[in-house]
Image (cartoon, rainbow, N blue to C red; front, top):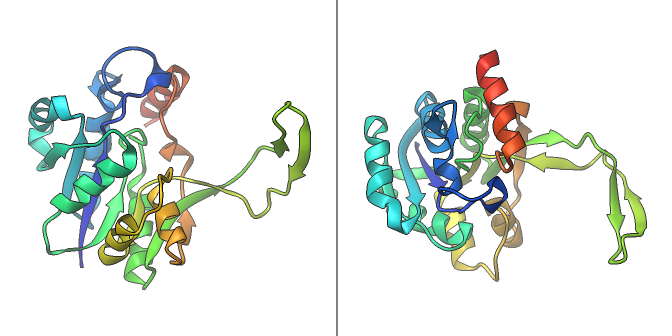
Length: 221
């Protein structure tokens, strides 16, 4: 089955401070978006890639990614709208869809391939996860601890998140409100989501400190 990728990259990234949109912030001299697309292009299973860019930067982003054979479309004000725009632009031969955050620019190839393998094995949806390491507490509106949440069953979720195309399209059509990720949309539609092992290298660049960590990961090789 042909595997396509939708990469929402239209967010401002306010927590990184003022400047260009987050996907265009530089990491080791290149935008995060270039690092992310390069990683995907190193994956044997990946076919068409669609990037949902800031509407006023579509041409610039397309020029930036000329070497990587991607289609750039205008993203939306919210992540969910950007994914929907990218999904609509995928060619009809794509049956399996990966949704990947440009901010997770250093995702290892083996994580991407593990998500695809789960879909090929019959999962309708699959996401990479890591066990939660910190103690988690539920806190009230006054800042008081309400309870300590058992972490044995908790996982932090990464991208790429993978789906059968029909499942993801139906989840977007039937969405009631906004979700923070596409797996949440699919779960709300009653679809079982399978998990695969993620990687610490697939962390999300959100703050200036994360950029420093990403540079360290690149230097490590």
